[in-house]
Amino acid sequence: MSHTFETLPENVKQYSAQELQKLLFSAIDLGMQIKESHWTMAGREFLSVHRLFDEVHEVIEEATDDIAERIAQLGHKPEGTLKSVAEKSTLPSYPKSFQSIDEHIEIISQRLAYFAGQSLQALANIEEGGDPISADLITARTREVDKLVWLVESHLTPKK
Ligand SMILES: [Fe+2]
Image (cartoon, rainbow, N blue to C red):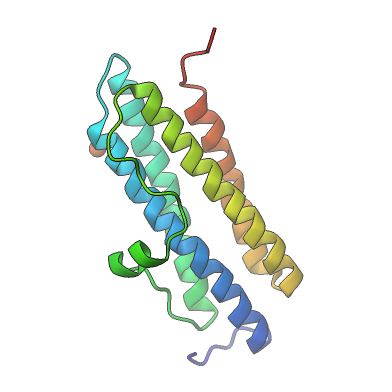
């Protein structure tokens, strides 16, 4: 797209930007789903989970920013408007209604795990494409998201 002094070959930049863009759609969608859950939950464990989800949101927001800025750095235009996210995010959509805190925890764990899986796929592609810098960025962010899966899941009431 636009000129950049980034040293990677044009086709590599193009491929990385395209892979990162798919992640960006999901990351934005994921951030919104976490907030929706944060706002709508109710139940005995409300305060701790409500606060936890704000922390989770912060991590996802930073990852989102990092991904978008890497796309820009590669000389491409990050696409992050609500309309394009609604059309192109592959993250499973947010369920219309559910009740218990455990259901909120389960849904957000699933969404985080989905995103981590998608990130690992993008990582493999980008590594193969020959862009170790974007790969490093995704590795670091996926490590954080993977930890969030564990952190959120650990709030589930153990099944007897
Ligand atoms: Fe809040």
